[in-house]
Image (cartoon, rainbow, N blue to C red; front, side, top):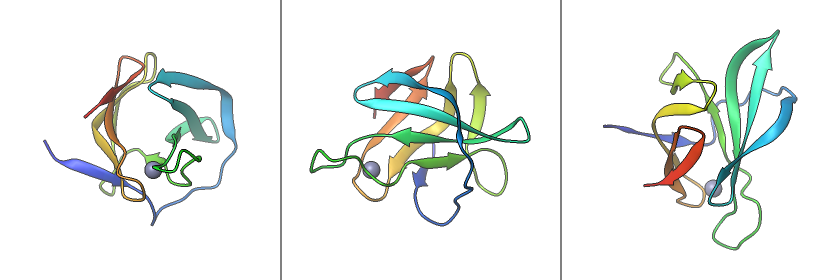
Length: 99
Ligand SMILES: [Zn+2]
C-alpha cells in the first residue's frame, strides 16, 4: 500500500462542516464541503513540540488524493503521513490508527 503525504500543495479554503469528530490519539477530523459536496478534511493533530501542527489537510479524488471509503464512520485510504511532523496513521471506522 502506498502512503500519501499531507501537506502543502493543495489547500481549499472552506469552513469546517459541523463539530470536529474525535478520532482518538489526539486527532480530530473536520469535513470540508464545497456546495454540500465532500471535498476533503482537516486532520487536526499535534506536532513533535506538542503544539497544533499547521498541516493536516487531505482531499479526496483526483489528482492523487485519498479515497473516502466511508463518511460515517469515517474511513479513508491509504494511510496519512504528515510531512511536517512525521505523524502517520490510518483513519478506519472513525478512529485514528497509528501506523
Ligand atoms: Zn503534522
